Length: 431
Image 1: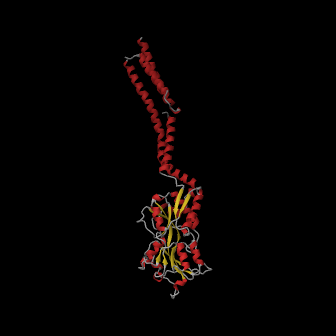
Image 2: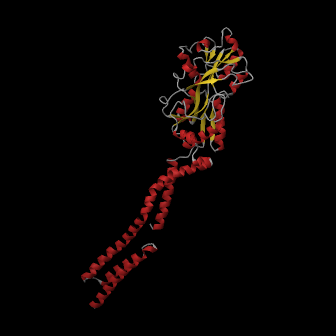
Image 3: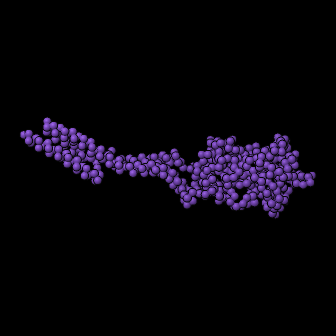
């Protein structure tokens, strides 16, 4: 193989190595992701569709999956066969020990535990209900099995040593609960949603529905992980309807986005960037730029998510379109280590080429020395020796050498010529 072919083969091999490294070591992000949310009336579903809009602007298709809520979402995201990539859950629903293959990306909003009751159902009380024991004998809906609401309510009831297995405790969906509450079929409903959720706007506008202040709110967070206490001022949720009609205390999990640990870093970066655009505004429950954040989460926080929340998007993702940034980043991840290997090789390449050239000369010189030894012995076949020298000259002339090695070639040819001259002179003398 000549040197040009050698270089061409090296370049082709390098391209193949880069292509394989890109495919296996630095794979591209998926073109489609699935987000497990909740019911269609909840904040998870609404926010999931906002993410869908923003992701699809960047060339990633999104499927928003309707589910029963946090518990089902955890099972889906934990199962790689489900093809769910992201899931909304309530903080406190589970932990790293139970789901070691999951990690949290960010908390995205508060979703307080609202205890909504019909004012007429508590006329016998001297004051509004404010403890679990005040409502435990009433007809109460605590959410469907598999929902984060039900999971949290069962823990709170257990702290007061109150059973949720009695016949007056029902497991209705949020829509069913609100309809039953308005019709008088139940007296109290629990739900965990953000105050912007459609169902909460209906509740705020109904003067017959009130929100219970939880007198024991500060006692729950030390016993149940992932909870915060929120103080909501009078009329801050709806001024016209004076909702709430007094200052109230609520306990609130944080809605968080969870993924498996193999989630692609580019998806994480884009997700956090989108979250900062969608969620950084202040509202009645949180201050400006409070979300997204890494606080009060169920699982270990994803390293890439932490970095973007702390430092913002990378230089490439800040100034380049998403897919351009992805490809540049992938190439850099492959080329930088490759250059670290190739630069010393390239530095050593001239020495290799020089050695290879000297080796070509050395092979011919070795044979020339052997011929000269025969000639010096005085007993040799003239025609045979001349043929050997002609063959060595032909081989020398056929060597593929750079212009920089012409002197070495001419020296070799000169030595062959000197030897031929001595052979001819000795042959003439012998005659």
